[in-house]
Amino acid sequence: MQKDFLNINECSKCGICRSVCPIFLAVNDEVISPRGKISLVEAFLEEKVSDIGRYTDIIRSCIKCMRCSDVCPVGVRVEKIIQSARELLYPNIPPEAKETFNFILNNPSEFFRSKLNEHSRDRQENFPLWFLPLFFHNKAYLPQLAEKTVIDKYDEYIKADNSSSLQVSLFVGCSINYSNTFIADSAIEVLKNLNVNIFIPKDQLCCSAPLLLYGDIEGAREYALRNIKALMVEESDAIITLCPACGVTFIQDYENIIGENIDNFTNKVYDISEFIDIHTNYKIKKMELSVTYHDPCYLKLGQKVFNEPRQILAKSAELIEMKNADKCCGLGGTLGLFHPEISEQIGKKKIESIIQTKSDIIATGCPGCIMFIRDMLKRQGMGKEVLHTIQILEKGLSEL
Ligand code: SF4
Ligand code: SF4
Image (cartoon, rainbow, N blue to C red; front, side, top):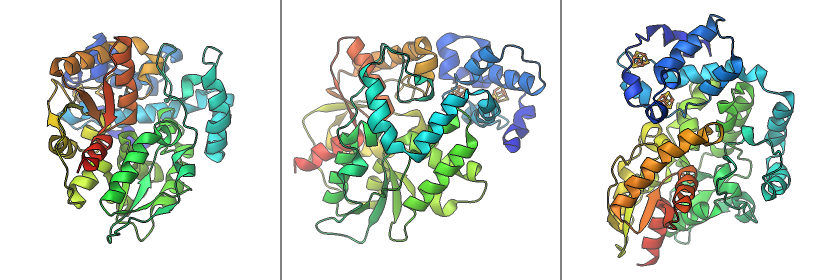
């Protein structure tokens, strides 16, 4: 953690990072800008912050999109500094919330199948939502929990009919495992169709991103070690993620939280569209529909994947680029939970860009963005389909 604070002193307060931060651009409040957050963390480290509640609120209003670090002329890693600041706040988290984290860690299935299901039926009660980035403020549309999780539904090994020598370990991620299972269904169908053998380890857990958001570095380390153990089987040529929040956690956070070089793991991590574009020779029938693509922050800026989904979509349908495709949709981890008004402001701009394209379908590569864009469209009375890139590829393959 200490090393992440090291280059905080190199910040010259030039303010260039303000021009790209979606949170600052939405609210135009210096204190909430990357530069403002750096100053606040410095004040906190010097024990000059008196209002810890307000400080916590501001520190939680970063979506870790990394845009600021990308443009910083002196290489300050703002999102890492904010992550370290969150870790320092972890002791302030109430013990009941920590107990819940531990409960999830040890009984993930039981938690999601019983407690969460029970609470999601009546969200008006005082459900302690604040620790679960799966949920947003009360007005939001929430997808139903799946009858059967992906992990329960499929065998651990799925052998393709005309099996090739390729095998992947599939990391499902909570959002898809417990709710948006249709994304995994499509991914599995596509991989089978492309003769790729699939290993879906039953021992996989949450990627740990929610724990990192709340600064629980010890909990995150335990998740990371267990996930690596589950996914790293000799036979697998790649580890596939369907959600970039998981992908970026694997690639950017695991090494830091484990504290040792894990290149043998991170070099194998691919987003599903990246893997398919690079490692398979798929043939597809172009469908008579138009699609526009939204770049999830973590996929473009974290996993550096933006051409591959476009290649897939352009082969599958008429691809119409939206303006500012790589601007945040507004979801931003827990942003929608703590700052729904900022989230909505950012989301409205994304919806304007989408509408301008007049496309039939919206595609993106993140279950969180899908959920949020659907919600925003729904609020404006529009029922357009918002699909994961892999669902569009599945549609195209089935038309052959
Ligand atoms: S973080 Fe970088 S870009 Fe932002 S104010 Fe500091 S030096 Fe400038
Ligand atoms: S990581 Fe993104 S949201 Fe956080 S301060 Fe930087 S630009 Fe703003």
